[in-house]
Picture 1 (cartoon, each protein chain N blue to C red):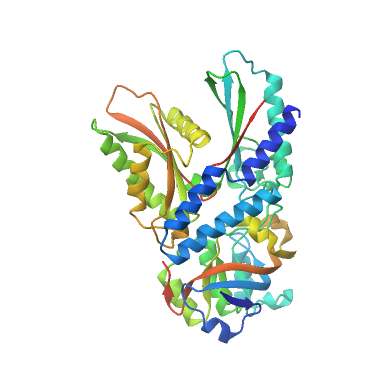
Picture 2: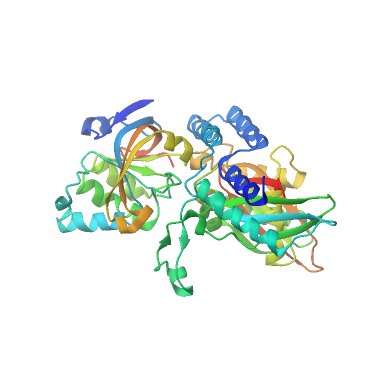
Length: 168
Length: 280
């Protein structure tokens, strides 16, 4: 088990291999279909910095945040997988955390930006016991699909795409 | 305990608890799986179930849509008042679990395109219509099933031209199940199957299969389907391995005098069938 704490360094990410099981601690971001395209739009327009939210070295967990807890949705949905490139290239996101197989071109793009895709089992009760804080940081009108920042301790995930290789 | 409380507790149990046969199915699969990452996934799912049971908290953040299966003995009576109490029990159970607040607000169009937004009250989520079945026991027994969205996306209800061969029907079910299981994501799954004379009947039979199926009791028909789908080597979360499917729950009803069978198939996710029963 590889212990990782956010924000991740370039070096820590470059050492990850497909199949590694990692334990993630620190603050991570949560967003899915509704909010990720909005972040990309602001990054591309160069206005994201005005929000004062630093994504550098961060994790985006593809989940809603509701009273029921958190759990991964399919990362290969158009709006989610379509956000990977902008979030990593312009935002500095180092880990996209979700589930499901992603396209070969996405795997290649992640390698070019020294970023990885990790799969987390949909274990809501376990994750709830490892979630210390939660805060809505943007677009609260989206409810459970808003952008959240949560503080976690020991979320376990498996590296599914890294350095141009994929587990699928 | 009154009926409203019984139903509410039953719903919370359905959304938070693995039955013993379900836990045992996971233990066996973990012991028999050689791919390390797939073993790790199944251990996580089982650990999650133990934590959820202890806390009576949701197994999954998609807490599901309540579906109700009511068994009624011939000397028992179902009244409008009882149905209202069941409805109220569901509402309270959803608030206690808590269910994900995912009731869509608005008129027909707004509910389709989701433009009316979501109701923030977990209890605002309506249950599906109740399925009622007469039984030989002297009971009124309610089974609450919590059905998630992923399996609903990948489920298929369609005809099979059987050519007077069970093998043809099994092969077609397997052909439909393999891509469905692969696309599901949250595997290992359990295949729920109903075979009947119409879409309604096949789906009702599939519901009954989910309500009554037992991981430890598998018919030859069920075993054959499980084994054939597992040959696809999809594995838990698609990571490969022998355990894409833990079991198959099938219910075969009366059939039409024709060349067609209607088959309802649902690849239930790694937590399903999330269900619990209570006598009212």
